[in-house]
Image 1 (cartoon, chains in turn cyan, blue):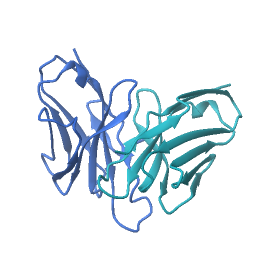
Image 2 (tube, helix red, strand yellow):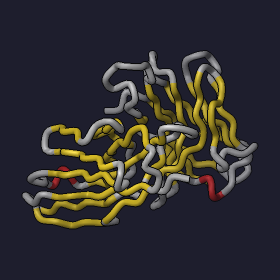
Image 3 (cartoon, each protein chain N blue to C red):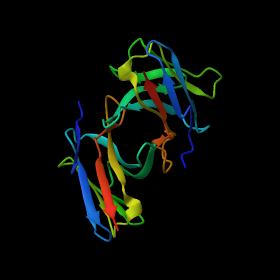
Length: 113
Length: 118
C-alpha cells in the first residue's frame, strides 16, 4: 500500500523567503504526482502535475521536481508571499493496480508580512 | 474557481438521517471520484466511477454509502443513516483521462460539501 509523507507538517516564514516542501512515497512505481493547494475550509486547487517520465514542472514561482528512485518530490516556492499561505498537499498515483491517487497529510504554510 | 459544482456547501443533519450530496461534473470528463476529509485529517478516497459504474472503492465505502448518476449528468453520494464520525468535507473530483492530451490526468476538485452530523 502506497504511503505518502509530507515534511514539514507546518512552516511559518517571513515574506520573501524561498521555500522547499517535501513529499515522499514508499512505492516508486508511480504514474504521476500532483501538488495541490488547499485554503482553510475550501477545496483543492491543482498546482502542478508531474508524469513519471518527467523530472520537473514549473508554473510561475512554483517548481516541482520528481525523483522516483528515491521516492521523493519537492515543491519549491520562490519569493514567498502572504497569499501563498495555505496547506499544500501532494497526491501520488501508482502505475499499476489501484489507479487512485493517495494523499499526504499536507504542509501547512504561513507566510507573514 | 473550480469548474466542478458541489451542493450543498454545508449541511447539518441529525444522526441516523440520510444525506445526499450532489456534484455537477465537467461535461467531457470520464473518471469521477468522491473523497472525504475529516477535520485535520488526510484527504481519503471513497469511490471512483467510470462509464456509469463503480470502478474502485475503499474500505471506508461500505453499505452505508452509495453513488449514482441519477440523470446522466449530476453525480450523487448518498449516506444512509449518518453517524457522528461521518462529519467531514466531501469532495468530488474529475479527471478527463483521454490519452495523449496535456492535462488529461489532472485531478480537478470541487469546493466540497461540509457535512455536520449532530
